[in-house]
Structures are given as C-alpha cells and as structure tokens.
Image 1 (cartoon, rainbow, N blue to C red):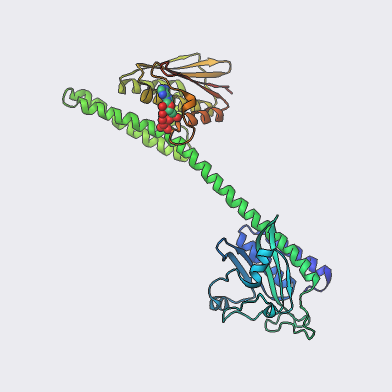
Image 2 (cartoon, helix red, strand yellow):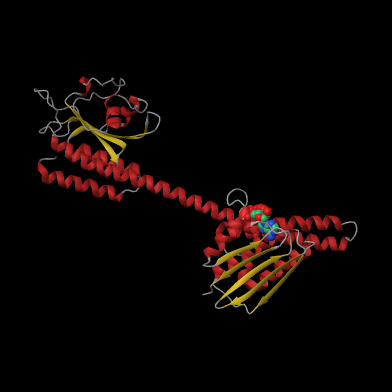
Length: 392
Ligand SMILES: Nc1ncnc2c1ncn2[C@@H]1O[C@H](COP(=O)(O)OP(=O)(O)OP(=O)(O)O)[C@@H](O)[C@H]1O
Ligand SMILES: [Mg+2]
C-alpha cells in the first residue's frame, strides 16, 4: 500500500475526498479510521471521542468484525495508554503496548495489540479525541490480518513517517468533529430562535383573542336571564372569536400573515377589531385613520400586531375610560398611535425578561419591519404607544 510518498499522498487525498462527501460526523470518522488503517498498513485502527464521564461519546473501529466487536463487550473506558494520550495530549509510538507500564490489560475477546501508534486529536488546546493504530502489517504480506510484523530487534513497526501521515488524518478528524459541533450548536440556536418567534407569535395573536373571548363569554353569561336575545348575539361573537383564534393559531404555526390583512387590508382589519373590543369592554375603544396608503406586507403585519398588543395592554392594565387607535400617513410610511387615558406606568421599571413579553415583542416587531417604537407613559398620565414604519 503506502510504498513511498506518492502512493501515500494519493491515499491521503482519497481519504480527504471521501470525507468531504460525508455529512454525518460518524461517517467522516469511519472514513478517517478506515483510511488510516489502509494507508499505514495496520491491522487495527480506532478513534475515540471522550465524554465527560471517563468514557467515550463516540468510538469507531476498523479491522474488527461485528461479531468480534460484540464479543469484546462495552465500550472501553478512558484508562491506560488511551487515557494518557487524551490527558497528556502527546503522541505515543510503542513497540509493544502490553509492556508499557501504563498498560492495564483488556477484555477476553479483545484482539492482542502489539505495536501501537496513537495521536491526540486537538481543537486548539483542547484534546477532543484520539486516533490510534495497532499491529503494523508485514510490508510483503499485505493485509493478512493475523500477521503483525514480528520485529527481531523489538523496534516499533510504525515509523516516524507513519506518524506524520497519521497527524494529517488527525487534523482532519479535528476539523470534522469541530464542524459537527458547530453544526449542532447552530441547529440548537435555530431551534431556540424558532421557539421564541413562535412564542411571540402565539402571544400576539392567540392570547389576545382568547382574552376577548373570555370577556365576551362573561358578558353573555351576565345577559342570559336579563336579555336572552343579546346573550345570543354575544355567544355568536364567542363562536366567531374562537374561530379566529383557531385561524391565528394555524397562521402562527405555518408563519402565514393574518388572513384578514390580505382580505380587508390594515385599516378595515383594525377598524373591525377595535369595534369588537369596544363592544366587549366597558372602556370606549375608537379608531381613526388619515391618508393611509397600502404598505409592504411585513410593515402592515407589524403595525397590526403592535396595535393588537398595545390595545390589549391598555384594556388589561390601564383601567382607561377611552382607548384610541389611529393610523396616519407620514412620508412614504405610516404612524400608528395607541393612546389610553388610564393609569400609566413606568416603562423603565418593566423587566425585559420573564413573563412580560408584550413590550419586548412590540419592539421586535417594529425593528423587524424597519420601523421604530416609542412608549410614552408615566403613572397617572396614561400611555401612548407610537410606531412608525418607513413604507416601501
Ligand atoms: N397601557 C398600559 N397601561 C398601564 N400599564 C401598562 C400598559 N401597558 C403595559 N403596562 C404595564 O407594563 C407591563 C408590561 O407589559 P407587557 O405587555 O410587556 O407584559 P404583560 O402585558 O404584563 O404580559 P404579556 O403581554 O406578556 O401577556 C404590564 O404588566 C403593565 O404593568
Ligand atoms: Mg401585554
């Protein structure tokens, strides 16, 4: 096999090409181990990635049959020469691993290893694995698995040159492992972002609808005896709100924009929603618009969501008698204003984290649409939420 540098180079190149075709880290590691064994004429090759509990998170071998692997039993622990390679981060080239003072024996079915070449796999200063070979095969005998090279002089069958070649493969194993870690990390981040998007979406859309639904149901209950006809009307409203909540939920999950926006446009949607709220609450809820022109979809959707949350907050927290929503044109864009004459609050005192998602979510929405949000409020002074978007 590796007779001279030319074939060595070709084999390394083949190994690297094979690696670049694999995406799964385990496949890459298998390729590295098989290439190392093949390239360096070893009877056995293995690669271990340690875990934090003295064992191995991954352990890949080549040269051992499935039956043999089963018979050996559980994965090795980090001990003996293996542990030394991981903890001291240095190469080991041994003529007979069994005679090394650190040798602690192996399980019954474990193959007998004689000469040994092992290298740590590093990512910067950190050792993230070990790549090792055992039993250099006879140069003439090729791959007779039962014929490790017996050396009369007791020298190691693995050479300095073998070590250099193995170092190249160890470096590539490091890259493969690091990439796999980065990939895993970025996947986790994407999932976390997706979760938070969904949480905001659900918060904005569905929790408000459910809140209105509860109020309308309460109103219906209060009216049942006194005015059954109106109670019936309120119950129809309950059914309509429940249907809308279900739609919003579906839309949030598949990331569709609110259906009403497409059908009726922002102004009509806001007008209808404020009318519903006006009926459901004791506070007066009004809506005005001035010179508004259609905007890019993301901006309209953001305006709607912010209006909904601001309205919801005003009705839930402020005790206002009057809440007004207005939308007017400014330049190419628009300004939304939600004003209440309620208790007001200190915006700086609201913790950003924790259970209060509304204000955070409004800011996200505004900046996500290229706009800006301002919150003007003080205890006893009512609240005005203003959002401006630039238009298209
Ligand atoms: N219009 C308002 N009038 C009075 N207080 C308000 C008003 N808007 C917000 N607040 C106060 O600011 C806090 C934070 O509002 P935010 O919308 O971030 O969270 P929340 O409404 O408490 O919970 P969530 O919106 O996550 O269901 C509220 O708990 C409330 O005390
Ligand atoms: Mg809120």
